[in-house]
Amino acid sequence: MEWVVLLLALALVVGLAVVRARRPARPDRAQPPQPARPRRPRGDEPALTPDDEEDLARGFAAAEHDGSHILEALLDRRLRTVQSRRVPLRAVRPAPGVHTGRLVFANGMVLLARARRPSELYLVALNVRAHAICLDSWSHEPDGTVLRLTWNSETAELLALGLDQAD
Image 1: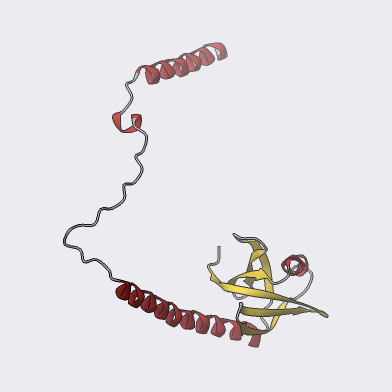
Image 2 (image 1 turned 180 degrees about the vertical axis):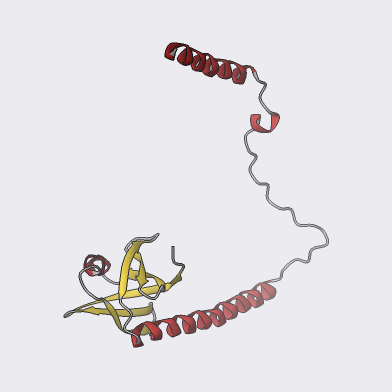
């Protein structure tokens, strides 16, 4: 009885393969995707002068500068809460980038951080389970926001890249 079931299953697989091989190819799958053509400017679009381009560049730079203060203020508020409540670090998870990780705190806040020196992030990751690692202080420097984490008698300085979502 088992042989009959196996033979029927084999015949079904072979039959499906034959039907699929004989089916004509769909026209939308037969052609390789075409590269995007450059957009042609329409005749009714105004041309930008060098002065207009400079104005746009200044406007974009001002908007980026204004937005960075908002993100910096949000980061400061979250860091102040973590520091004042002595919220410990619970995990260091992988993140895209070299020497970059996700710092997961016990209150659910997640930060993307990069090591100032390559070994510091790994040092924090190795000690996160054995010790209560807390945020001691932070400062804003030209490179970005520098976090100073402490546990027992050890410290590590990490560069905060910004807030991230909890997984």
